[in-house]
Length: 269
Ligand SMILES: [Zn+2]
Image (cartoon, rainbow, N blue to C red; front, side, top):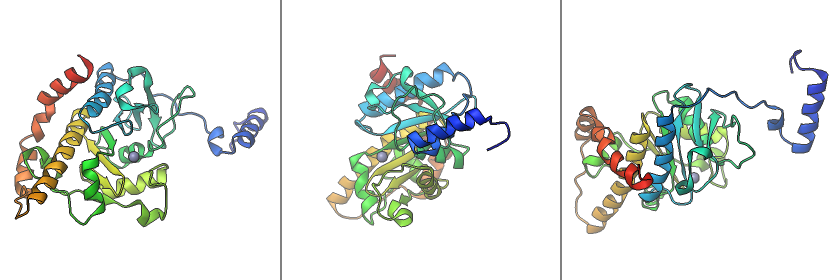
């Protein structure tokens, strides 16, 4: 409490506290960084729909983008099935997962994945969280997910696994507060994605297009790897040096060509 808080506002805050039973009621909402770039909003809406159409997201999962006007704000949908998201559903958040103005709408309980990754990784401008079934086997076995083909060069430096049980014991498996988000971001470290044991994955990128493209090809790569392993025999994975050379040459050409196609199919634009 500071001296700038009047007795009246203090009492009002206290009443809210007793009704809500939470300190959140006393925290003022963060101020907005301003109106986001319309192109960013359009691409973020497209990202939700593309990822649903490509079978990466179903009724669950989400994608966010860092605000173009402020490095400490990100934008994501209210709690909603991805394929239904429109620009009107997007909400601005601070790193603690507080909405600027939720207008009373429900929020994704795992928004802390996004806030804590943006805080830890200044290079990241988009984050995808999904539960693609093809990825789950690699999160619960000792078989590492590895790059099978040229489209998956972005995992040439490895895919770490976050096991929520290691730091938090028995949980409901959800990254539903800042402490869990921080722990996830720590395991992600400087990589492009982190598997979440018995849950899913978080994928990051320097653009929305990269985060979406990586999510799509990561899911394909997992299927291809499972198929190759089922055939038996030795598998020749991409060598880390081959993967690095592809990254140096420009990872999948910035996903520009498929993005145009995915966006047109998902949004008609
Ligand atoms: Zn989840």
